Image 1 (cartoon, rainbow, N blue to C red):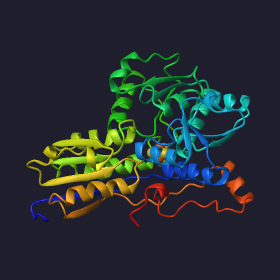
Image 2: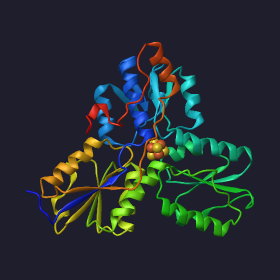
Image 3: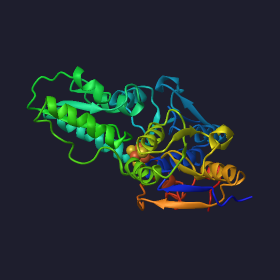
Image 4: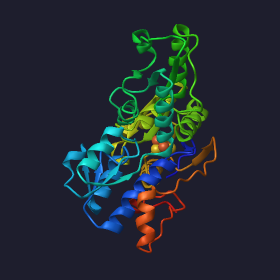
Length: 337
Ligand code: SF4
């Protein structure tokens, strides 16, 4: 029964971004075109459900390129790879499809450009994250990682007049600005990136959470533990006034005790999360009296990327459509529409 004292605030935008949609559709189209198995280096996007569903269709996820049989097709994930990975694939005679998000590629290009100018590049990001490994690999001798504000004290540069910061695309905007503030205290001539590295999708999802956080007793973020932007959404909610926040892959992971004494639940999802999983959480909440769902719209999004050139070429040659879906849904998981 709906309970008039209980409500859900539903963040918008949430879920799939343009880069994730493109990467997932790339794997789906590659399976249609070449047939299984299609190899994917690392998780195509950081979401358990997406990976499991693609595995069921014949995608094989590997950690390293040398696990792919000679001559097979391998797709590089949305997080990007270092140039050395392209070299390895070439040496093994693999057919490669690069599903790196164009907004990650943009950061790679910035890194190359500043390395060519002999800058020290301070890359703000999380140690070991695939995107950071890929970007660092563009210019390892020029790039050093700065893993948050507390890491600033460890930075050393050759020439304080020639230093630039870049960042991972999925960080907390506020924490990154704090890291930059501390870096600038140490290096007043620190240059900013030519444009925002934290991508539109990360920024918009954080913005929506900030708008509703103070009104929420509980924030449920749908996303996987290894999804950087999803983890950040829980942190942002807690920093902006939500009493408790949890990350869940599926509705089944919600602990009913979290709802004790709660009248407003915030719901959002990370950029790699299909909408069907959010629907599962809303159904779970609806069954427990939280049937009043109110959208909180912080921004409109319409960005869509074309598929990678390699697969567009092969799709065209086979007389198949090279168009992206229009609704950002995950075909393997059903959609809300
Ligand atoms: S979160 Fe941003 S950078 Fe990452 S895939 Fe999505 S749009 Fe691209």
